[in-house]
Image (cartoon, rainbow, N blue to C red; front, top):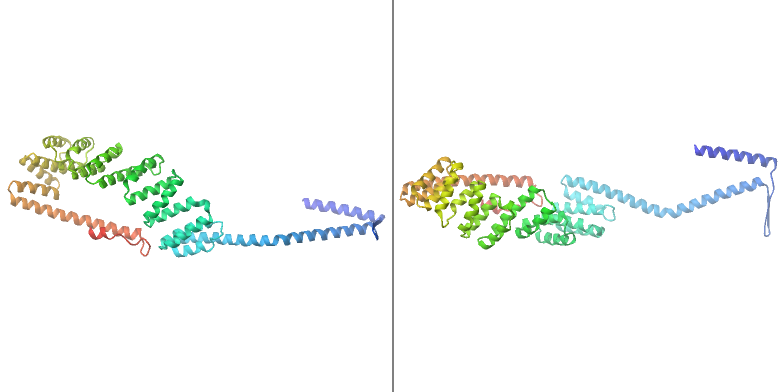
Length: 429
């Protein structure tokens, strides 16, 4: 509409000027030095219009000529950027479909100088990792930092992840230690450190890290509780038969962790190995008074304290609530043997076997019968116990082998870099 109005006004003005010039053509006289120009007003106006158009066209042509190299440069760069983006998209699709080599080739083809070079190189590093090309993986990570120095944290985190996945524990520890110094409260760095300490079995370092993990809520509460329990079990196991160290570890555990039956069992087991039976009788007795656990009841029967009569009295009080527990009856039989109550021991062993035959109970009963001189009956109990032990062992081994086979088939595809599995556990099971 505006252009139409402008054209209409221009047409009206031009018509008016033409009418005026037709009535009076006018006269233009220009004197420049030795030059004299005489013409009509109409011709002068036409000449000025032509000169204006020529000047405008010349200026536009000159500007276009000056902008051409830059336009070509930006056009080429834009074309390359578009190719890089398409390569990134296609490469990520190939990665999602598990074609690592094709993904790596697509991701690196246009990565250099691209706006998405960081993403290209990081994705290419992951693809190279899956192909088992660890040298190329490190080269891509180095290229990512060189192309984007400000992304050092992101690249280093990716590097630590890949090193952990490849079980390069020393390298990943160095990478994560550097990252922790750069960002002490970075939650993902702490999460990877926890994973690394667990893989290394560095339970003391993990125990030091746990309060910070809980304070920063790096993991859900239930997973933190499980990690705390695993750490406690690892520390107790690593302490061996050092009773002083075992006591220090136990005192350093949180109330929540000491309330776990599995942790209590580990502590009692290690203290029994250290010969400190009396030291754990009271905490074990108090635990069972609050929380019943069959494994701990069995542990109570393995304690050889200075006051076995008190142990027996305590265990018999549990009969009111747990009289049908084969484990409690086994424990009572053992305590009766220590108190030389042979008849009661025999009754408890037989009652336990009637409820649930176990190899361990047959063995304890056989030892009592041997002590009483009933060698034939003892041999029969040994035979029953051996049969149960062999059957239980076979079933456990079959289940473990099935789980291992399933894990190998599903978790580690054939031909991948992670196909190799530790053979000792399967072979020795």
